[in-house]
Image (cartoon, rainbow, N blue to C red):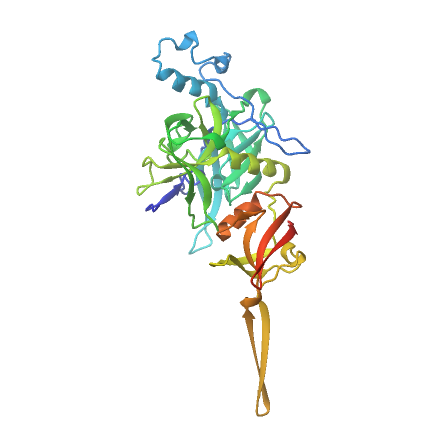
Amino acid sequence: MKFSSIIFCLGAAFFGASVTLYLNSDKSIESNAKAATGNVRLAQRSGATPRPASEAHLRKPNDPAYQHLTPEERPHVWVYDKCNRSTAHINTTSVKASRYSNVYGVASGEGSGVVLNKMGHILTNAHVVDGAKLIRVTLYNAKSYEAKLVGSDPQTDLAVIKLDAPAAELFPVEVGDSSKLMVGQRVYAIGNPFGLDRTLSSGLVSSLNRTLPDSKRSRPLKSLIQIDADINPGNSGGPLLDSRGRLIGVTTAIASTSGQSAGVGFAIPFSTVLRVATQLMKHGRVIRASIGIGQVYDSEKGLLIVEIIPGGAAEKAGLKGPQIVVERRRQGNYVYERRYRDRTAADFIVAVNGKKVDSAEMLREFIESKKPGDTITLTIIREGKKKQVPLKLQ
């Protein structure tokens, strides 16, 4: 899948000297992080700005208030009525140095965010707050608060910030299940495109498990939801909702030749959000398991271990990488020495916990699905024979 341009819309939507970033995030996710487990629970969020004192978010799609609408319009209006106050508008300010002088300029950006809980945690994209010296969050009631970065994970493009706002002004969104999404399913996005806060767009799930390369990251974004709902600069970090008003993803990027919506948008699935946001709130970063292998090569026999990290899990488990061979020869009064790596001594990884692995990416994804301290079983080929090797992840 080739695109002329991959545009990331949170945080980098608008830049310019002395421009104030006004990010208004339509997302509201209520996330209760338990101190012991760090689990994220998203509580239901709803309400519409024109009716701050009403119980609009408790209405059903067949409520008498919606009777003047067509059957097709009712679920659209109801989802927005329920979820729009869960979206926040994020403005960032950063200082950038000139390439040719000691002059520093002020750059601004904007994006969207989702309220995770009544403690003030807001979920957004990492690229929205990357390098920000000042972060301001504007809620549905137009009240603005300064926020601080709790943690960021560029590998998944997710970040959590925190503001000090009254709990009564925070409306967490209800959580859904991204693992049950189907192509063709109706979805809704709320965000702040071009600074137009709490804008609703709708569309369908166009595809699942998409991968997007990114030159700013060492690895691509994986397992993304592709949607055809309108996504523009400023939407990044906003909620992607199902027809029941439940959070199923976080909008992150568009594929476009012009930098504007071209009907191809992408969202990070909630399954990733749950795992990452939990750790960001608990540790301020994502703690990933390590297998202790620096590099592998794909081959017909399996994954050839090219580098073993000294003191790592693989070395402790007895796995073997290439051996350093030293050859010496004498010529007259001189001794010449040559060193090279003998890869014939290295192990090949062919399966993990009985499941075949065909690529380095498959191995990495499997390891990242585990926690430090978990024990896995590698099936390797050594000297032409298969062998089972237990390994404790670090």
